Image 1 (cartoon, one colour):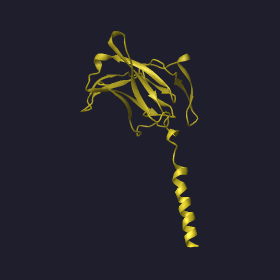
Image 2 (spheres, helix red, strand yellow; image 1 turned 120 degrees about the vertical axis):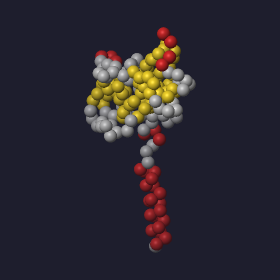
Image 3 (spheres, one colour; image 1 turned 180 degrees about the vertical axis):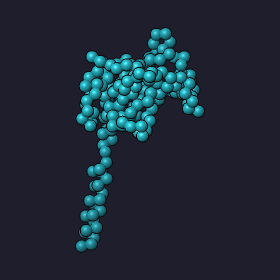
Image 4 (cartoon, helix red, strand yellow; image 1 turned 180 degrees about the horizontal axis):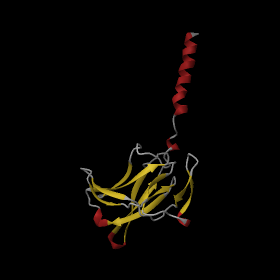
Amino acid sequence: MKRATYIIISLLCGFIPAAGAQRPGAVIRETSKPTVYLTFERFGENDSVWLRLHNNTEWGISFRTEHAFQGESVAPLALSDGRGVPGLSDGLEITPEYFIEHATDRVTTNAQSWCTAVNSSLPPGHSVVFGFPRVRLKAWEEIYVKFTYEWERGKDDPEHRVKFQGFD
């Protein structure tokens, strides 16, 4: 009887981790990519560099931009807590707040920010593009955009950064 009970308990306990574990695709849309990342898009006019910011999660993310977007630039985005916010259209050209720092000592060397910047939300699976002067980013530097996940609201939340290195 003890052996049968032991076998039943062992079998039941063996199923608990599998039932409670998340599916690999439950958080990340494309599992071979990071959750939020930057890719090179193109070189533009006036020796500019264009990057694409990707949201590869199942949640909205937000970051600061120069101005609020309206009209066809946005679509309603329903957040997981039931709130509705305007979400940036996929592929939209934006002007985000960004910072450039030395990759080794983390000293900020350049930035683009505004006192009146607004938070813009990027829906799950969407990406946006932005450009900056190529001369601002040296090979030994990184450009980054700070972002927050939709459930984060306070000063005590961690700071998230999506980075792109100059030598990339």
